[in-house]
Image 1: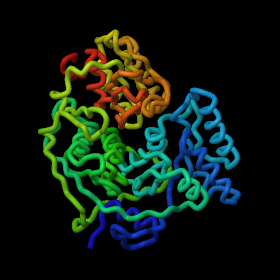
Image 2: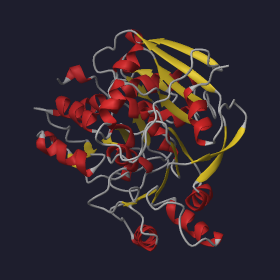
Image 3: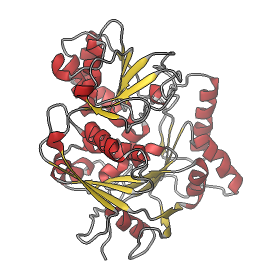
Image 4: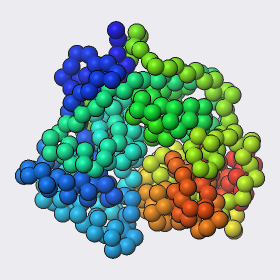
Length: 420
């Protein structure tokens, strides 16, 4: 019997010829990631293990991005723990403010993740890297500590679900809409501990930025990983960029899937997830008119250059509604610089938006855009749980960058064609 993409990667990294769902395997990890919330806990646990050094100084990445630039004394202390650990162990991949970015935008950009890798991170959206054909998933801080010492961790081999996308994309529809639509169909626990494999002619034509967005939100469906088979688009992205060994795996023709879903994208319009779950999706035509106080464009889901270009296309020549705060977060310094070179930052500022240094900030209700009681935001982020962006009586609506930009202009959830 053949193997799925997820099974092949786990088999290779655990020294096995074949694995099947439900088996427990010990797999070597190619990259271990921590941020300023999770890494300090992992570091404290690592220091209890009694080892003198990490398993590989080149295969650990520490990125202070959630409360950075540090918003208060506690966040400064968290970052200091990371900084001192990175210096003590001479870590190659420690990214300080001014050089860093939002971790899940940064690592692929820096060539630290490759097709065929096994990557764990003490952050649930580590599944983003499945867009490159890597088995990437979130773990707890104690698992992270053990992996920093051992260079391996255990997995239960997940079952796989195949999602096949056919048809022609409608205007303003992209990866964010495809994954929101999918979550709306199967629910936030519809892929619980399963590998979500996205395929079909529409995925084949999707850009890397769109693929990163889709795999980023696999966790919002309960998925263990989101995966896209690497192809020519992947190769073009990793060529000259990736600094670690890459292997292009593909699922076998006779691989077994627990379920197969087929979607005709010509029936999909831009999606909006209403509070307070990502599964609470509605087509944009049924979502317009909801008054907003804030529009957030960025995050590890939609902070890449393609996302900023979409937002700029909508905001160009327009003004943000005077009653709306529009905040834009480029995913990395490199993306920020590219946006400046292309004139996107000028468009944003002339439209009345604020452009922030790369940070996770408002996505987790950390800083740089917190909501007060009763306020509503539309955001290109990945979660809209109760209190996610601030007060527990605030509301977050999820959308793609074009819809978020149009809504900022209109002062209410709006279609991009209303302002373009």
